[in-house]
Every structure is written in structure tokens, then in C-alpha cells.
Length: 183
Image 1 (cartoon, rainbow, N blue to C red):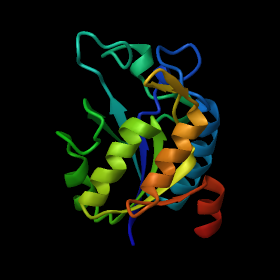
Image 2: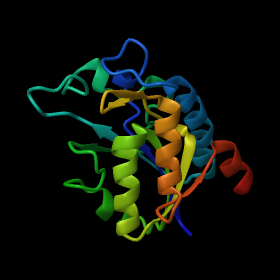
Image 3: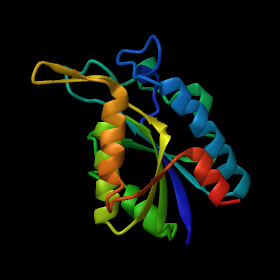
């Protein structure tokens, strides 16, 4: 089955000194580097998704800012595709689905940020479009959330979303498990 690595919103604003830093973003990026290296070595398709927030009230991913740029440690190389999106769903109002179909991609290996927002939305949309998904949980990052006056720790948010997505929407595993599986 022809596969692609889909790297969602790994952008400067999510890292230390960014406008909206996430918990474990650096560790996720390090793990992404390993998977990205394998895809590049094998000549498999790599697609970067870059979120640009066009709302006037945007606090991060503002157009033409350093914060909206793809994180340097995993930035695209010549020939790799970058798709710009403006909503949490990487498929909505973008050429992603058409591009993947032209490349005859059936399986997506998905990594990125934020787990509970753009990653979750994209995994579910990919499932609805008929893709077979593999989500690498240690290549994703989130942050503490507040709901009804209670703070929910980032690790709980991460685990909860991964558990939900593993129930039919995606195979969920670590990057180590994935790299071992494809050897």
C-alpha cells in the first residue's frame, strides 16, 4: 500500500518562546525527525501542512510571521510538498485530498500538533475519505486545557484523544513501534 507521511502544523509558535507553546513539543519534533528520516531514505512521500490563521483576532500562526514558519528541525527539503490550510481540518478547502489521490496514496502516517485540534480533526477527516491511518502518539503534542473551571493536564488530554482515535479512526502507536514494524 502506497503511503505518505503527513506532518501537521509543526510550526514555531508551538515551541519555546512561541506565541502558543505546547507541552512536549520538542520531544515530539525529535521523534518526528526519526520518522521523517526514514521516509526520506525510502523515497516515500512527505507532506507538510502549515496552518495560517487569517482571523484578525489571531494570537498565533499569523501570516508572514516567524511563528507561522515550519519548525527548523524538520523543515521541508526541495521537492517536498507544503499545503497551506486555514482551518483545523487539513483537507477542508485545500488540495490535500486531490494531491494524495494523484499520488495514489492509500495510507497516511500522521504526526503533528495540536493533538486535540488539528490532528484529531484531520485523522477523522482522513478516515471519512477512506484513508488507512497510522497515528504516532509520541510525534504529537498538546497542552493543558481548562474545562468547567478544572485544568486537564496535557498528558491526560493526549491519552484521551489517542484512546478515542484508536477506536476505529486510526492505528495508534509510538514512533519506535512504527519504525520497528516497517523494517
